[in-house]
Image 1 (cartoon, helix red, strand yellow):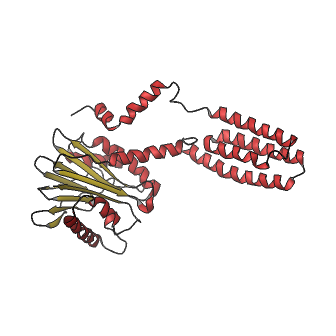
Image 2 (cartoon, helix red, strand yellow):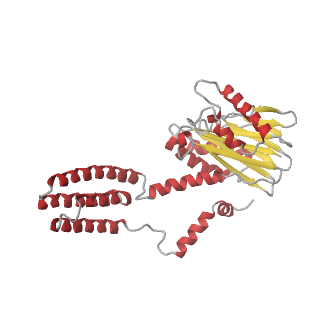
Image 3 (tube, helix red, strand yellow):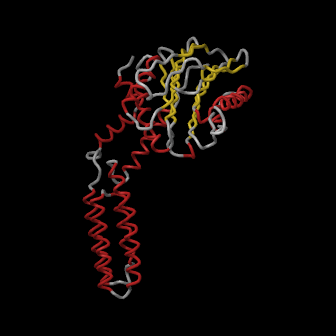
Amino acid sequence: MPSLSARTLRRRPDLMAGRAWRATIPGSASTPSVHGTAVLLVLLAFSFLYVLVGRPEAVPWSVFLPLIVLSGVIHRPAEHGLVVGVSLGCLAVAAVLVGSDTPHAVGTLVVGMLISTVTSWRCLARARVGVQGTGGELLLGQLRAGLERRAELPQLRPGWTVEGCISSAFGHPFSGDFIVSHLDDDAGRFEVVLVDVSGKGIPSASRAVQLSGALDALIGSVPPEELLALANDFVVRQEWAEGFATAVHVAVDLDTGEFRVWRAGHPPAAVFHGGSGNWSLLQEGVGPALGLVPAPVYCCDEGVLRRRDALILYSDGLVEQHDRVLDEGIDRLLGKAEFLVATGFVGGARRLCEQATSGDTDDRSVVLLWVD
């Protein structure tokens, strides 16, 4: 098995690129000085005051407002407070000294105070998570890119195809569902894990980011039968107040077609048998959801995928509705999967996501593996 560092570099070429960039450009690892930009905005505010007092017809009263908005975007609370205080102070002083356009000055001052309230609130919100300026948006973008990169499924050897699809609830940029996979060409083994983290929105997505990173490090590095148990240990250590996760893990021998499926509180995988034309559910091997109990035991279902066979993993967003039991949703899913048999499995993962019973009210994810 390759070393962890080599495996990490293969999966994360952006790390090598980032190091090369920082080595090439001196000082690129540090952010621009926020103190310098704060001083610049303060000097601009005094300059606007000087011009406004000398030639009030040449400069609009609202000239101070962009300074407040720009500071709210790039500064920490302390620097932003300085820029806000100076800008509003200069605006008030100009109103007193000019005196000929008091209504416009007062109106601009009120608007400036409202803008300052909003931008200060945003600065404080960013400070609580330890980022400044556009760092918060960049951080969220990198986290989302990491989830999307891990969800990319590899191209398998000829005769095997795998597809995946993840759709978040209400089109949210983050999903509580995620997919992690690993292909060992030398051993002829493919593993994939589909996980559904409890909850929706940002709280669910933050837990999904943590757990996906842990599983990405584990899959392919530990024996398949130990993966869910180790993932459960990780979730238990996090002590999430309301967080748990369900998962289904599949390991396939691409040489023989033999596969094993482990489940942690997750809906059963479905297998299509090309010889008989029937679908069946793998319902025997199931353990508790991740994070509920320490040291659980996860048993597995076993089988063999032969020519024209297929395997479907899915989250409960595809089969669950508040007014129906889970079994009914699974039956509907298998009914839709019958159309894939007739029309072909290519593109089937996305079609199943789009036709989910829950619509867009829940996160939905599918992994579809088949033998040509």
